[in-house]
Length: 117
Length: 113
Image 1 (cartoon, one colour):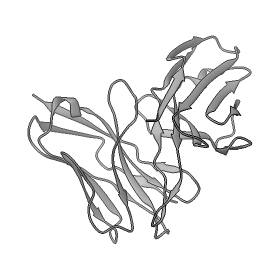
Image 2: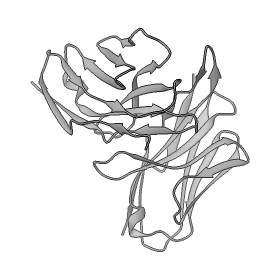
Image 3: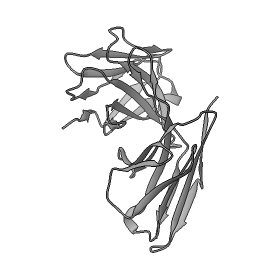
Image 4: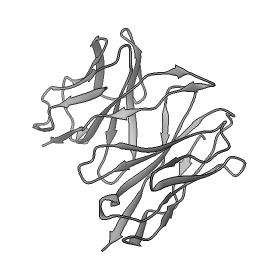
């Protein structure tokens, strides 16, 4: 079965410090990978998605970046954190299938709570 | 705009009763998928149920079922025999052709013991 891990679970960082959040998927190969951010009491905002090891798309211009050093590893980074980067970061994976039609369901990791002070 | 709308910010139901959460969406596509996700206080996003737009039959997963009205672009979630563990935020989402989930704003479900 597939599992998805995120770490750290919680992070408190000062403004201007760097950031690295890691997401790893087990039990599948060549997954699509996603980074979302969720502000308190709000819906999800897609930040980045990757459909291949050299294919990363950014949805929101900001001071965050994403990388995919391995097939099942997705990293979210920042060189200098802003107060507005605080939030809950969720990583998700999916595998696209073609049955009658294209199917794709996203499964989420446990998330990382980031507080920038 | 390709949007997903959840018009109920908060709903409450007595334990063991049935509750329906509403969701409407806008799309120009004919082939798509719809999802309900649950986010408990732990904040992990958990898939509840999925509906393929090309299927006329409504999806069911144990106590959870949907009422999918394609022409009306409506996708409601019915929870039968509500349990305390069902208390959570519920998000409706639609998968589009650009590898993206379009999310609703969520409905907070409160279960009264």
